[in-house]
Image 1 (tube, rainbow, N blue to C red):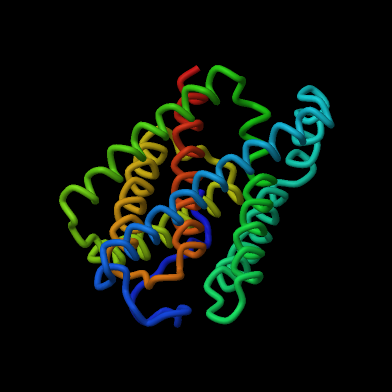
Image 2 (cartoon, rainbow, N blue to C red):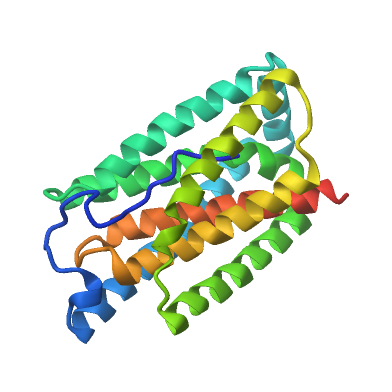
Length: 243
């Protein structure tokens, strides 16, 4: 699936300071990067805690039954879920980009984490612990390699933006068609989306070095978090599809 992804370029919004991280002093730039990745780590940790609490409270078997019941009521149930998620993620992105309120920035990040925790319930119900662990480890490994690639080469991957926009629209069109007409997208689509979100991680990571301003660590963490979780989503789908 494709989501209403947050993204940042030079003129997208005004941050608390006009100083780009790339032009800041070494200490300021390092502080911005550390804050961004601490927020990312905290977001992933909070997501895991929420999912664990939900499944502990409801029970895995009952949760699977509830999800199957919801999605079997109508072929459009999942389409409605995706539509609501896209609206919520759009609002969360706007809040996280606030130039005047730190509280609103954090509220946007928290809202997106909450929305993603709900969206992940169906695949987590069906995947099984072994697939979830394998997908999480694969995602972490890919994320580490992509991050190191950007930080070592210092390449500006903002040229990927056009591809990501049109690729995202095409993917969303295919997903909606699959839901409406009931066909399976298959392995090729899953592999393509894994590659797509790897490109998004390259893009968002390079934005941290080249296009974010000092003070935008919450918005930067949200953008990276969205990319990482969606990469995990499709890697999990791949492990599930191989069974």
